[in-house]
Image (cartoon, rainbow, N blue to C red; front, side):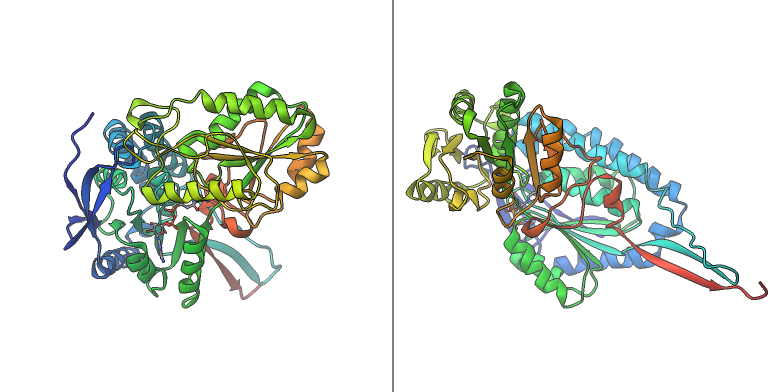
Length: 481
Ligand code: NAD
């Protein structure tokens, strides 16, 4: 347990800054306030943006030898590792997540800086042969000012996932933190501050999305937007960004399906379902929210999933419970309403189905819905909670059609012992990432992103670095040859 400051600030132009208004941050497990944070106004957002602009335009991030950026990123990683315990406690209290998962978020954040430190001095262009009389090569320039809008479900690791490659490539950054869970990011930035980057290189503001987020998304001084959040918000940001044709990376929602064939290893499958839909109370963009099960093993698999769900310990994140609260009362109401409408459309509750009272906060029972059909709302809409929809199928062809039959395409999974079948399905699944025999099998090294309404652009891995640069071609006419 760590004492948590009563009031937190924004980080603008190298200084911690207060604001006239503030936002109260509540613990989802108790409903009680944890602390308040300065609520950035449009003026504050403008100051933070101009600080990043000055820093980018000064060339301080790109003039130095690349080894300097490597050193900055490694120092940031070391500073983050020094605050893992303190940061995890703050994140667990404001977000409701398991304490161990909050620790893992800070450790993962440090890993992102270490990983992209390894690339900061290897952003190499190519030379292009054009024959005698010409020399041609490409340069990778940083975008300039990267605006990064972060959601509440994994604020610390999602922030690091974009911030690390952006800095590795020489950009200045303005992070807009989520109103519901902004405090862990303050701990992250306290650590980053100690790494001694140039003034204005990194800025952090917490403000209302519709006010400061919307102001920044359509701003001519922003050179790039990296947005992680819901589809509706992503669409309104894209509309605002269109005004100045600001390039964007969009990491949006999902309705990801796991295909379970009769020969699947059952132990591996049930462990994956547990992690896939109940980790972080199902508030994961790439959650396994649909389980497609071959009819001959449907009853057996449903029974095993129900037994697993009913064995979960529901409780506070600080007690490392198996299933933790959802982020807010509003989120809980939305999840309950979706479950009610699913039942009205014919889905059957095999386990859970409603909120759990008496625990103090916003707790949803681990929920398993069976006899779901692909056309039901619960099979099409993102729930963002601990709710699994189980759908039967007969053939491989049918399974692929159901899996691909939503507007989303973030991740998908195949569970089978038959490698040929797994690879056949993987090729045909419309998703940015396909897991075979283990949900979340990837890591920070593997490219991640969606197709369709799940968004575009890729984060993580080497590929993501190239979202943070623009290519410039230099075509030279040589005289005398
Ligand atoms: P959200 O869209 O409500 O908010 C995300 C961020 O956008 C917040 O910081 C918010 O303040 C800001 N915002 C809100 N309105 C804005 C506007 N008009 N202009 C600019 N910014 C605005 O999302 P959320 O509820 O915080 O997160 C949940 C959603 O995020 C889910 O749909 C989930 O699938 C998605 N998500 C996607 C990924 C991914 O990598 N694909 C990861 C995590 C979460």
